[in-house]
Image (cartoon, rainbow, N blue to C red; front, side, top):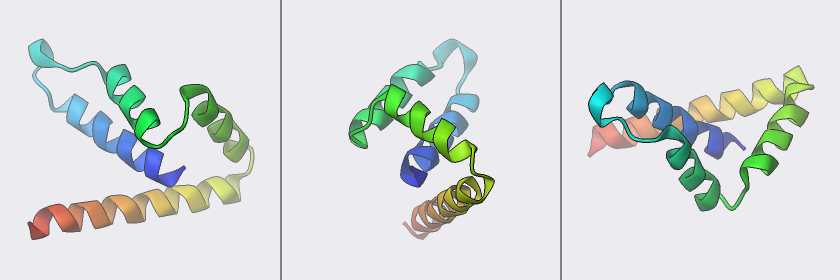
Length: 79
């Protein structure tokens, strides 16, 4: 779950910084993320809804997501 959220955050960040006339389809990007992580959009949304009903679990997932994004950033800077 955290990996999917991290990838979605990166896709959204890239989307925001694209030239409006050259923006890619964010839904297309999300579909690729679901496929890569072997989950459907519906499964992801069901999981998100489930975890959202438990603030502690959702907080743990977001903390893991932040850790993944921090590692990806460190890896990108180190290259």
